[in-house]
Image 1 (cartoon, rainbow, N blue to C red):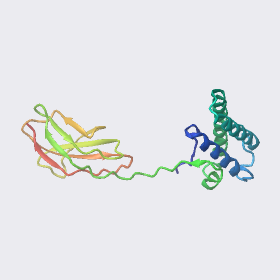
Image 2: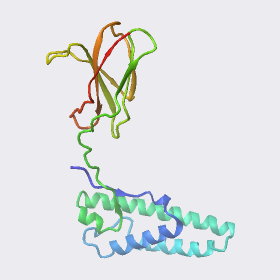
Image 3: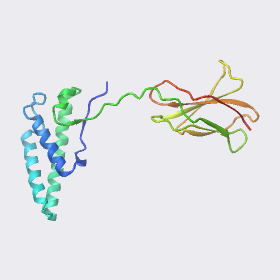
Image 4: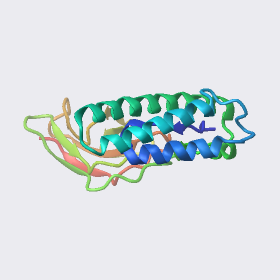
Length: 206
């Protein structure tokens, strides 16, 4: 089971957004039985929020010193929210309902990708020198690598396929026997062990 995680990243919030988020967390945790002893305390968070709000008002005048003071109060509030998020994560564990009640945002659980689709636009073309062939497919989304396989003709159920695994969707095969015909295929490799192969292509090697 994928663990439920609180997202932080408060440094990306705009000034007013940070104020609103801190107020929402404060209200959500007040008298919240899921988190009876917040660390830092809600009193400390309230002080940090009030200090930040006052600094925002002063900084609106555009004075350099007021802006610097606002930024210091902002960083202090962010550190407090980060610590509080760690406390909530520890106490809430994987209880989604409890974590959602904290006012913090939760990361979306990753869904299994499943088998990757059949590679499209598979091409097999002569390479730049004897005994080489260039094989390519359109890139497959979520593919970690590609499995290229080939075997000599005639292909039978007992044919032995020579594999090549590559992170690229286009590859140059070398060491092939000139004047011989081969069958080629390719599959995208992802987290799912299922392999869905492309259409097969037969080519003579120059």
